[in-house]
Image (cartoon, rainbow, N blue to C red; front, side):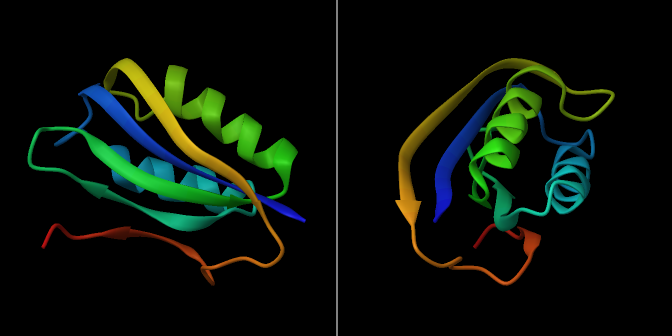
Length: 96
């Protein structure tokens, strides 16, 4: 069983390499999913993987981020267990 959770990070998180650092951290933890900049200035995404790694990523998203980011808060939603991973890797997405 795997854990999946969606996230949205608020603060100064665009233009500070937040998505690149998020991608690196997720891959380091063996997680899959995505992240993308949103029009309102936040970064949204989803991570999936083993529960301990997802929990570590949640702390990182809430408190660390990229070196020049200023995280005001990180909201998590739709946390659930999944039988198989729905992504093959973790990658940043471009806004549509």
